Image (cartoon, helix red, strand yellow):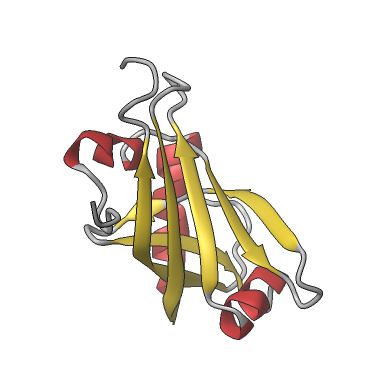
Length: 135
């Protein structure tokens, strides 16, 4: 059976609830680094954000492979694990993306009004929680 490369319909709700993601990547020393991050889905790609000039942004530019896991805040057995690549980096104009994420996660605009970037992650492999627990 070929690996899944798209988010199954029954797991797309993870990107609608304020479920925190864990994004992992390799730093310059080859160490795995993991950060909890706000996450979005644009249909076929994962979107995350970071301040301009951040270590994450530098690492994403140098090594584009990332892993993203999202676990439902409502049911720990409802989760998804994704392997992918950063394929695009764009400025977050007027902080529209991070403000939308802040509304979703904390119910208000983002407080730190410094320039940010949006990272688009193409999905290479999806591991769904289908066989784990019940919803």
